[in-house]
Length: 279
Image (cartoon, rainbow, N blue to C red; front, top):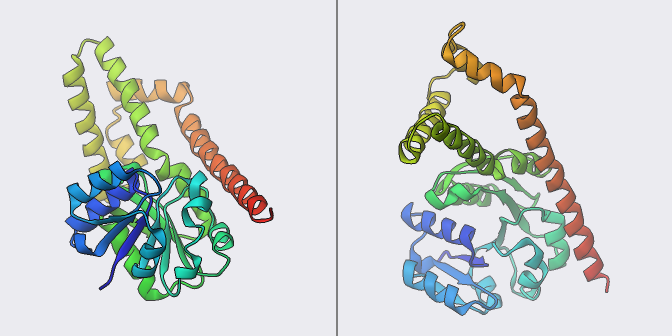
């Protein structure tokens, strides 16, 4: 029986499990989750989704055709040390930010079919924007299998591994940028006289509607912006203030900063693991 195994039982693992079951990609009987120490968390997942749980990661590695690395990035070495003898032709899928395929291969001591994925927290509601990159050992069939995994929790695109740092800066961290925008809009709405509840509902619907317009109208965001910005009108007053305050420059700097940090973390993790392997 085709099985998928998760090493790590955090929120991303749960989001994927929920999406895979809801989307009919895997049945609960085909899903195994291993966690190093938190038995209560394993019990919670087993009760909620009817899946198999274990603390024996070697057994999971032997039985699963796809192994998802979903532990915290800092725990990657401890999380996968010891499973290398159980690996043959399985596909390794990593959702670990900052951990390169080279680093994973170094820990395992062998070249494997590895796919790195950068989903975001909207995976919890099956609305993730995910990008994946594949190693040379990944077959076309395995790539298609991985696409189906992440399409079950949202949108999925294939990129080169070096582009994942930019993906992190744009969509990986992107939800936080949107939440910050909403925070500011809510504060302003309340200051100009709206109740918190009405402000929240109006802002959320505005975001949803604007996103749908971008997705479905076929028009560039600049065109859509100009269409709603009448000369000397209220929208122009607001947009002009944003431009005067450096809104566009701030957003660009924000994405670039997050991208640089992704590169820094990748290099830090690689050096740390290389040092541990040499001890």
